[in-house]
Image (cartoon, rainbow, N blue to C red; front, side):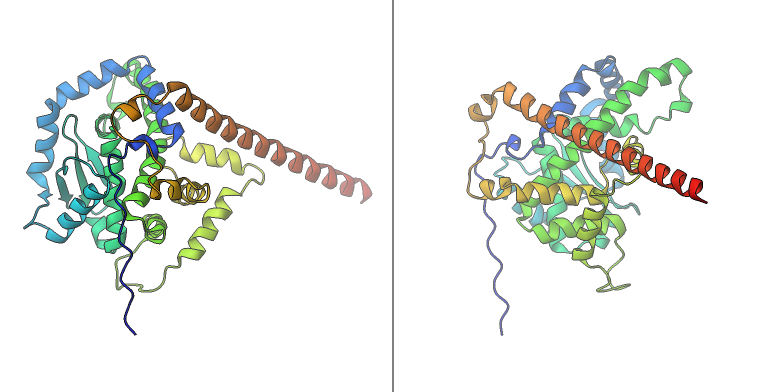
Length: 336
């Protein structure tokens, strides 16, 4: 029996990134831009790096630039992803010899993408397509500039700076971290749209959480179990669970992998993914520029309000349960 041919991927003529961007991403970016000291920090970092050319030279010197004769299969996938998004240019793509699983989009006027070799070793072809599409989401949304600044900013240890300078950077760093986490939620959606493969999109999160080299434990990962784990984390609200969740994510650049899996599943379930597949999306140009700012602000406000409401409700529920357990323990102590 022959294997059925894969369904051809849809292309999205003139699609604007606002079609998939998470409302909290756009709100957090506006907040970041308004943080006192942000403009000064970005100018100094860019001057230190030598601008666009200096940033690019860092990777030209110590990474492989992908092309028709260098990682040709990877190059073909990259071009196909750009075609899917109808993006007018194909950004430069580099592979860096790095043992830590990661990827990134960097640059200022001409963004480029870097994939770590560790990611290529862990992922299959379908998951690599998701990863490239994810990074293209960062490029199309204009995230590369801010992620470049953030990457350099977090290489600077606060202990290496004078006390006052270190304190001055704290608000900027916290704003960068909040935006960075929310920008990943946007690009996760782009990863799905570029691949149109929900299974590979969720499998990518699973391998980022605990992937191993192919062949060492073949067949030992189960996506259904991982999604059940994601649901378990999302609904874990006993005792101080909510507080622990907040503290564990406060100083990281990416959301937890299970959280990303759950957020993407929620987006699919809400019907937005299918609507874009039906070409019901915002086009680049006048259509995206004419999008009312009030709509974006309202969507972000609703998201954060719901998030705060859920968190507050979870804290209250946890407090009630703790109080009930304390009362029960007190009654039992009186009875003995």
